[in-house]
Length: 318
Image (cartoon, one colour):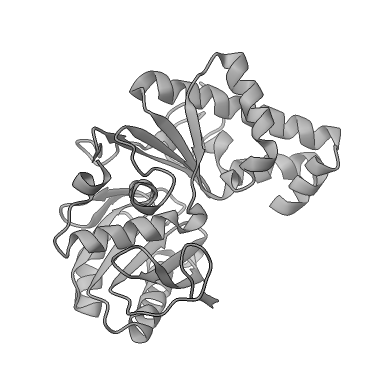
């Protein structure tokens, strides 16, 4: 499916100068955008992660080729991917089994050879925070934390207007901070990681245990109808999330915490449960729902591509 729209949803014309791609465990999303951040076209394909590296690359190549075919004036490509990314080399330093065979993949080299354009690569949560600070809810922030709640749990940190990536590219890897000592086994090898409790995958697993097979909208329908079991499930989820947000606030003292990802899309509906849980925890921090939704990573990737054309993200988001 494709769309031609700007951030307000209206039809736009113009020439795409940037391609931004976001590789997640479930889908690969891509946009063509101009230098002001207007989205000219948006595409999405299944990741095909079950087929390993070959399947992921096939999906990625098909999506990128289609965007570049439709927007041949594009001057650079930004790629955001789940996992720890060495931004100097463009290599995936580490990825969990959400993207099997992905560790060691050099995306910068691969995409540069395939498409003959400058390529910038970073972690998907870092890209999401860049996108939000460029054209989303994080504009004007110098100190912020991004928490993405999707197939997994990701995060990114902005301090003094600069991303904190860490010595081994693991800065903001909040999904693998232990939330419940000795808890559920995680695919990273530890137990009780936040990803096992706060990801959209974890939420829907718990919903399936309570109700049987159910889609996210089905869970929200039960919540809207006042079903006690659905209310309790989301209250427990909000409680765990409040504890985690409190930990982030204490560790980094940000101006705001930005919440994004699929599991946060319905936050407007269950925000009272989260506010109640934060109050019980004594957490006082500004929460902002990511304005760009699931397009945040793509927008940030496009912003990374823009940097290759002579602009500096940290300076412009400071």
